[in-house]
Image 1 (tube, rainbow, N blue to C red):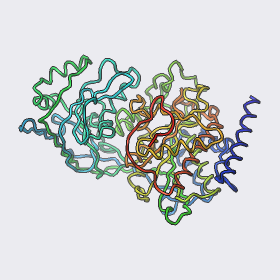
Image 2 (image 1 turned 120 degrees about the vertical axis):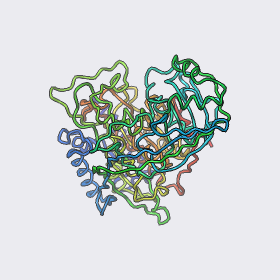
Image 3 (image 1 turned 180 degrees about the horizontal axis):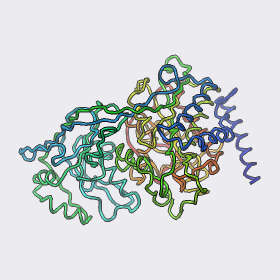
Image 4 (image 1 turned 90 degrees about the vertical axis):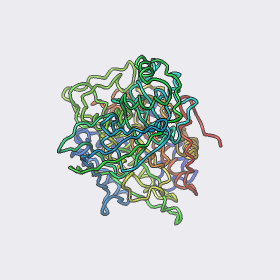
Length: 583
């Protein structure tokens, strides 16, 4: 123990010396001001029982927001919320919908239209009215899982087309995370393969697979924080009649292919050369309820007259899941994000009694027995660690040297319930998103993955290469500049990652708008979404070092003479990958 304390002191001295030498922390503030002691002080309040687990729409979350705002004022960070405050109102709308959408299929010159609820099913929230058309491209099970030897897109070009897939995957599907991989098929077809729309099997795991859901005169058919007129790529599910008609163009009976899929056999490569699909998205919305929460937002103005109107965003979510319900620890919304988008997240938020498998994905690690009477999910790591990390960043920049670009710090509400705060910010930001150079997101950076001591120097980096290669390389350079660089692990950035981490925290709301992002996390552990996620288990020196890495990366981006180039080459760094990406 004494040896570890001595190492920590030596490391802290080296950090201060190095940063002072480079000029990044001259005077007060700067990265050297990010200390384990202050992080622990703030987290001891943020993750205390007094805040009751910080669930969205509760007093505890309001207390956390007030605590953050008070510190921002003390440090001189300017308010950037509504009406000169630190708080941006986030409106969660309960909406009833009148469904008028349809899918029209043309096969060898013969046309047939399927209405929503009659052969095809659209999600309740389909977004703004539009018509999307393209040639049909059948991609078998619609999966790409290299580790399992599955690549249904091999030899297929889905770009600009309407992708069709069926079944629940081949027998070689991974046992762990399989459901989430199936749920991601439509999203991956659109985001990674650049399809204009995706149509999967009825009842099947995607945005359109939830049927008409539990309508309520109080809550509405669905709840959302997003703009109702926002156009999104359609994700639809369809029944046998639809696929029968489509496959008539292939000279093959759909019933035969479906029988193979039911047995999880390898599916034949079927081409649909004379099939075109037109999707008419048409829904009328009625708002029946509005609930309010708040993002906490502060800004530090940049020093360069030409660049101060461009921004670097830093973010974390300050909510958690509140009181523990009966049964084992909840997976909560983040566990559902990859399985069904916002609808799945909202469903999970109301079903916190579902036990989490393998204790946060940590095989062989059972939950520890909580203290008698302890039913508060304190969320020290999730995402108390990110919350205080962004507080430390705000203080470091506010009290230290200022970069050329302006900096915006956002503590998002309602991430656990469905990315409420970040989705609202992305749709209703006062700052034009084209002026945002990058968003750096922090969620769970206070532990070792599965509490493995071998992970003490590791931080998982997600999404850094997907939109901007340059941003990825800037982060690598920032890490290399630290006195004690972290081990940057890209396993969770792999598109075949069964946990689908890329889609499960607030950075995804910004990435969906085309903003380059980096997501920093140390991964899951057995206390994930459980009452034992407490301050006593946080590795504060590691938390400080990762926050200093985010500072160094943010400093580089904020002083770059141009915004990181958005080359949109997609994920390239995955399991086993390291280092920069060459030109």
